[in-house]
Length: 208
Ligand code: AMP
Image (tube, rainbow, N blue to C red; front, side):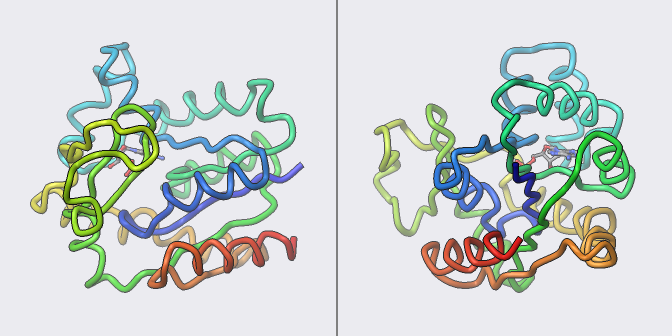
């Protein structure tokens, strides 16, 4: 049983790394951003409420997101653990999670602020399998895994990115201290190749 949180600013590589580690450990990756994007495209009540916040680069209200995570971690496939990618993002969410289940490790992926805007504004996503790429390495616009036509997330445009980074600093960064104080935090350098970051994370998780 291993419940892991991936923490870090937008563009740190949480999604990429949590997908890899999820496969390695055979535990599900739970991305609240992916869940919300699915809800928006299916126009569910949650999606309709969340859309305006997401488009503006603001956080969706805690109650909405906590309900979503509560239901998800209750599902059968989470019995042996899970990786949370993009949750918690506020102290209230972290407190709610603590009341739901144990947290074994918090992996903080650290990337210098000045690298993030370039990373995110060049990010392209596969609509079919959720993989993320950078335009500089995938200029043909095709997913390397399944061939899907890559697109740019609405909130990855530069205007919104700057607001997301500000929101991160104000509301999510305090969680670094929160989890350090509980002895759960490991920080890895995210300004490296995908493979090296994965290795650093694997070591951090194995020390648990
Ligand atoms: P992400 O894909 O993790 O960058 O999330 C995309 C957007 O979904 C964020 O900018 C927020 O608007 C919303 N979102 C995702 N996770 C959370 C969360 N834990 N709390 C509040 N809003 C969230």
